[in-house]
Image 1 (cartoon, chains in turn red, brown):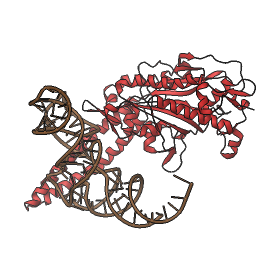
Image 2 (cartoon, protein in one colour):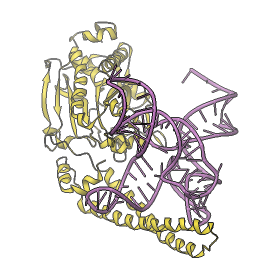
Image 3 (cartoon, chains in turn orange, red):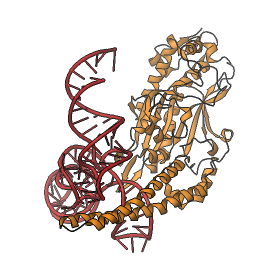
Image 4 (cartoon, protein in one colour):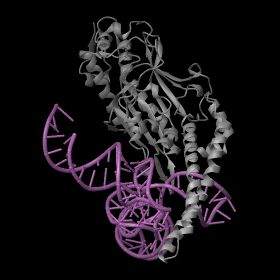
Length: 415
RNA sequence: GGAGAGUUGGCUGAGUGGUCGAAAGCGCCUCCCUGCUAAGGAGGUAACUGGGCAACUGGUUCGAGGGUUCGAAUCCCUCACUCUCCGCCA
């Protein structure tokens, strides 16, 4: 959520900044909502003030035994007009809140301006890409079984068997250990979250169709960002504790509404996938530096796995709803002959902190923290990349040296 | 699933109809004292929000939502959550 003050005082520049990401902020809607709210609020508050005065007079009169009839009459009158005005004010405040909740974060000034993903900027590439091997992971290994999963649950699920399941488990442990080594505290968290949590991180109210809803009140988490960030919801954090770095491995559940026909084959886009998430709660002054550190923490995993990847910076038009600056890490997928997203590292500035009410005291003043997060990494896609990049063309996949202690073997035999 | 207890400021915790946004303690801030450290002394310190350049000032908030009342942290109802005991259970 944006700061209402910002909209009041710098509407035009805010509107312009949001336009860079293709969002049209309507001036007259905001100004009439906010203006009406303000005048109504002033009115309601002066009525309340009058009532409060009369009520305290009431007590005194009562004590000294004087008559209170005329006071009661006055208060009754005030209450009568208050009632309708208060209702109106509540309604307006809700409308204003809905309006504010629907506005995305403002892109950071450093973000390249662009319309969509085609204008994202490649920052750097690492490793040698392999263009010879065109087999995809399903062709390489029979231990990834989407047909079996279809029987169990439907499309966009997968069953991993035997060593493939073990390899995924090895990747999870490896990534978590790497995060811990870099100073993140590991958490095990619920895989379901309530509405407040999802509002806090920005998935609700606008993107409910992307989520799986379990009951009246709970949703399956689309990313561990939700529980990890909401650990701090409604909390005051000691500034000495910043930045706080936390991590968790969780499955992630996404309905993938609107992606019909897209990435239908294999593990690339699933309703359920494993991910290690990195989250930092930071001082606003340090958040950009923290984003850099988080990005390098994620890249380190690919470095250690010896997989070719590139870092791209999202242009303004491709930024996620809550983000003010995002770097995507894309790993080389030989079968697709292109780089595919494997991590998305974002600075949300105070956007989530304002929604989730996460604050710290700074020189006696209460201030919102900045939240940063990114995958470190998406496990399913890492698994694909590993198989496709390290397939020897015959019967095995070479396990990267740093992963061998976790997997327990230098090769994964396939087919 | 059954029975009971609870939810108050950054934290702990008093507070059963007006003088309570709320005792006390902790923490934090400022100042004093001390060669340093530790200890000690004085004062300040809830959040959100409106108005004002500011001093200051209005309003809301004691888990959430309703109700009773001139007036609710306090009484009533509904809901959520936490804890204890019993039952069941990986």
